[in-house]
Amino acid sequence: MATIHPPISTIHPTSAGTYRERDVLILLEQGLPKGFDVFHSVEWSAMHDGDQGFGEFDAVVVAPTGHLVLLEVKAGQVVARAQGLVKFYSDSGANPKDVEHQARRQHSAMMDRLSKSGLHEIHVSQLLVLADQVIDKGTITYPRERIVDATQLDSLCSLVKDAIPRNSLADPLRVHVLDFLANRFKLHPDMATHIGQIHRANIQLAEGLAT
Image (cartoon, one colour):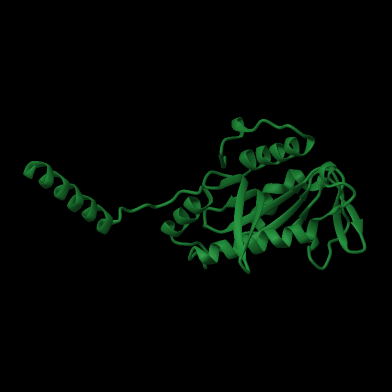
């Protein structure tokens, strides 16, 4: 059984979409073996030409080998148009969201953040999960092999494992990846500042004694 971060018990769905995302996490928890870690609702931030961009990964699977699989989960109806797959959201008015553009942006953001964190050896695959729809073919952006439709949900965990390279990374590197996704910082004391504080305190104590 995979480890979910944070645990599924902490999820309180408020929409049909979040219910479906929870369903996917339950499938991953029960279908992936021990040694897999799954992070969900992972907020990310990246800089591009001086501008800071924000987003969220629906789910990030960390394999025992240390490599990653991003899952972009789309519940409800996704519409195929000439420019690709789009989805309408109630809070976006009449403007649909370009699903494939969003997926490219997510993948690019993860690669950028890993690179800037020195995690160059991590391979990042991506699956688009269409939890409520059936699709017959892929697009130039998304190969059919990287799309999981409603008829394939029972095979989701097998498809996740198929997307992972066979080579393994060193254990310390995998731990670094887990810390990276969990937003765990490694903080060290600044010795120069510490010494300066002691020096100033000694001066103040000496001045008090002299007085």
